[in-house]
Amino acid sequence: MVSVLHTALELRAACDEVRAAGGRVGLVPTMGSLHAGHLALVEHAARSASAVVVTIFVNPTQFGPNEDFEKYPRTLERDVAASAEAGATFVFAPAVVEMYPPGERTRVSVSGLTEHLCGRSRPGHFEGVTTIVTKLLAATGPCVAVFGRKDYQQLKVVERMVRDLLLPVEIAGHPTVREADGVALSSRNQYLSSEDRARARAIPEALRRAVEGFAAGERAASVLRSQAERHITSAGLHVDYVTLADPDSIEPFAEGDLVGERALLAVAVHAGSTRLIDNVVLGEDPAPGAEP
Ligand code: PAF
Image 1: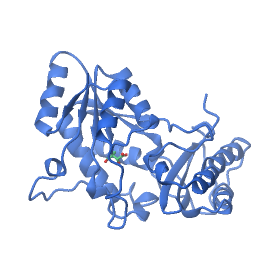
Image 2 (image 1 turned 90 degrees about the vertical axis):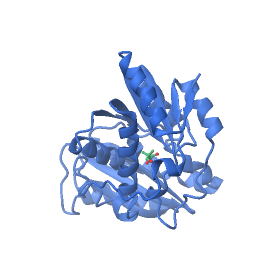
Image 3 (image 1 turned 45 degrees about the vertical axis):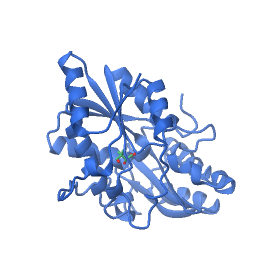
């Protein structure tokens, strides 16, 4: 049975009890509308910890004024059942006023890593993410926190923040979970029309071609990037960005650069009115659709 907690005090007490008994806490921060990708994070956490907290909170500060905060799917009852099934011990589902108490004045931000990719397209987004993740980590206390590599930039930003703020937390990254045709699982996939869902296949295809080109020895940043962009555009998707960047600093390569051992190919597109992101680290990740 999973216990549903609503206040930071309840969460802290539950986690303190786990640690006092010699256990380890695993944390999976989510915005709910859980799919198999989230449940893989819960299973990962359950393998690394004796009690797992799934947080479900649609965080207003990480959405821009014209984004989908209002229509973001909220399915708490189903999420609680799915969390329990995947091995969670607690679900933390706070109200907005619990996480942002009246009069709140504090934000947490990470510079540099947040300047490009989604940081450029969604001003303020990462500040909202790092602020809420700091609060969730503070309320949980020492733990292992699991994040998906689909949000690769978010994972790097949170890793940096945890090191910089000396938080007693281990951050674990979990590989992107994909549909059979390679499309990355996302809570936003449910917004897609059947035509846009078919078009979305071009995203993992473009990433797969880049992995293959890289494996065959292609190192020209302009070639790897522009081939991916062309493939996505020709499928009728609207490109927000297709960027080849250093996977550690998230600094984009210049068109004339040759990439080294590893390179992040990160993509954000609009399929209809739905924004989708995906990525692969060339030299590190398997080709989408070719996972073992
Ligand atoms: O990845 C997400 O779902 C969110 O950005 C997170 C980490 C739960 C913070 O709201």
